[in-house]
Image (cartoon, rainbow, N blue to C red; front, side, top):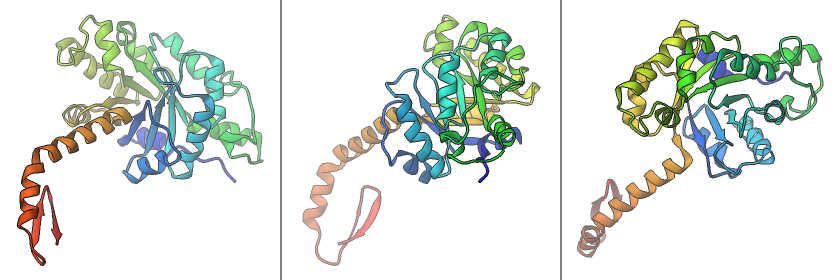
Length: 284
């Protein structure tokens, strides 16, 4: 049995756009299937700002691959032992926070590569290769080929060094960290500020110059369409907390606003009538 490839990485390398979402809060066995059924291609799990554990990720990564999703993670920190464990339990890629220089980017990449290309320690016949046997050299090559490495650009230093960072072999995506970047630039939360808008374009320019991709989390449709039109190709549509909050508040507001009207219509109905009610048609 061959190791599974990473279709997301292949699509990005071919200049295509990929879509997924981020998870900060809610884990369940059904989550990957729900996300896959929605048309997503990847899940990016955030361990920097959540309470997720390595065991949580081992389960979620297996569930993702079982339904055809690419499992990615933002690790809780930048350290070799964290990287190795995330990949060994089945992650297909990592997004490293606050990458500031080409030297740092090269070190991060080396943790995801086996010798002589890097320093990753080897285990085969485990979770990341589906507990199978096979040729070690082939598996090592397949594991390195499928691993996606994203550099989060969310500091002034990272922005200033973006061209050199994206020139590093093995860095696949420049991922915008819009909130932290606004703080680092001294314009907290001012996402329309010219300095942040220039930074947004600079990530795309540096990525395309080096044959790489730009990515971002899109908290609103307006923001998402704007960045997509400007060249962002790794698109995370919102995150679990935002999606639940937005859908719940929108639905409740509509129901609360239409309650009296609905009750009045129901009193007027009779058998065989058709009632048009809050966006749908139903035979009574």
